[in-house]
Image (cartoon, rainbow, N blue to C red; front, top):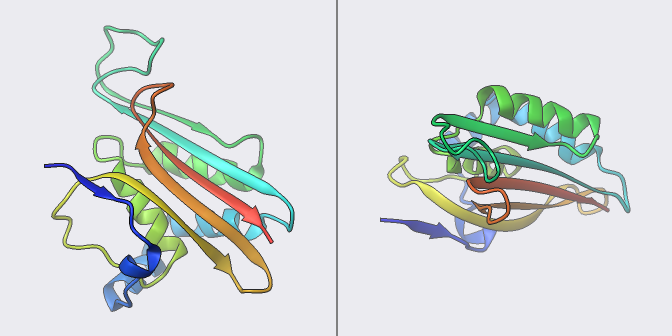
Length: 159
């Protein structure tokens, strides 16, 4: 059964000691938070993490079988650190876990169930920082019709 998680953040951003603990110990959080905090007022930066399980991306080797990743940091050093982490440690078979982890990192206290489902899509927006200085973050995860496979897009608009 497929589950679609396109919900307002207020619905899923429930205070949870376990969510906060995960956000404090997950090594993905440090480069992701640095990326979110680095975007200056008026700037927009993004990272795109592409994953494909058991088949290469469109235009790749049709005979290839395995786990494939590509990450686009758009020549932005804090984005490159996110890409470096995801390329080495990101989930490919269950790529929705990357989106879940990103949301928990950037919204401490966010809590999901006991891994009882595979996240197939996510589309949320929220701010990171303070009301006076930070970034409007959009996290989008789902199928990628251009490249094939899935894509996690993390976009930060500085304010």
